[in-house]
Image 1 (spheres, each protein chain N blue to C red):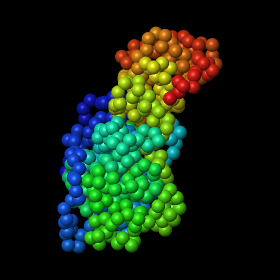
Image 2: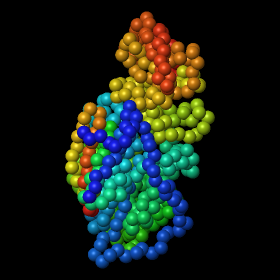
Image 3: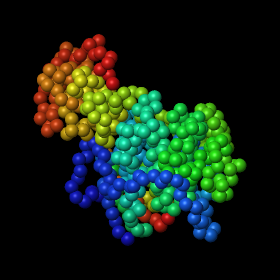
Image 4: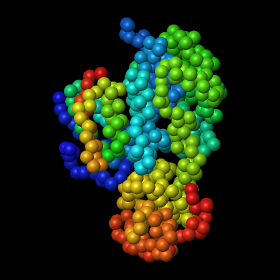
Length: 387
Length: 76
């Protein structure tokens, strides 16, 4: 295999490097954009479809494709997406076939898909959601507004005519309600260039319908959480093997993940995060035995390998005379804390029943020392240490 | 026509695909891009991205923990 030019980077783990791009303006127009510009003679109108990789956005794009519109997909990567990373990290997932569902959808539909890294811009959505959070740290309404706004910017930059989403009235308690749908259209600056094909008949006419680019009669009136209409439409189109994330596509809707993120903000005393932080929250067992430090305990070989990539950023522990987890220590720890961390490290390894286990404690510079500790009995680990 | 290289090692999917996509738009038809990655998902996702955009996958290879995909840019 040919080698890359230049010095090899650190290859022991996965780390995010921000792309070298200029920030995109996020200004939002106060009113709908000017009258539509006619396409070239014979050219179809063009729509950009938000494609999550789930069924609804796939169906919405298909409904519009069926009307002769040129559709291209757009997918936003926030860092909180469930799919992708866990495949690479956990051993059990490595045995499953890997696929990016958004790309799979695009391939089924025969459309292009543009995947956009919004990790940095998305932080503001998570940290300061204007409309607040859902039942966990999920800022669904702000998130939808953000994504439609990004799609609107893309539409304008690429000369497309309108935006489509797979939203269904009543599907989600926060972002997909009849009263919040106009909020997304307005705050994104998309206004009546935002068309929701799956429930359009229940909403006011949009520009593509008024202009006759799409036939409103061929749009749909799906409503509520019942998935049967979508499944019937999928069968009609011959779609099988589609992903069914059903709200589970974002880690922020997960109670345990949100708890860990809230703990991270609380422990640091500031509501900020970096990409590596939110990655580490997806991996391992997290315990906070003391307010000033927590432990991230690998649960299998894949997670140990992943955590090993962070050994130059965090102190780490591992048993040397038994197999077991690699444990990262996030925070500050004195000698007593390190002994406690070592006992917990021993507890989660194969030496858990031994009288004594040797545990290596290594700082971020690679300086290691070995301590001999008794594994902590499970009965001595308070439930509230687990995040 | 020229040959280019992209280092996506250490990045988790879909970031190798995103970096590939952003690099390809800067290249001319006929140019080739050699992508090095370490996330096994890249071996599937980069060819899938090429298929939906009409670019040609010249080769894929996996050696130990490193993946190499070579893409030829096609005018689309």
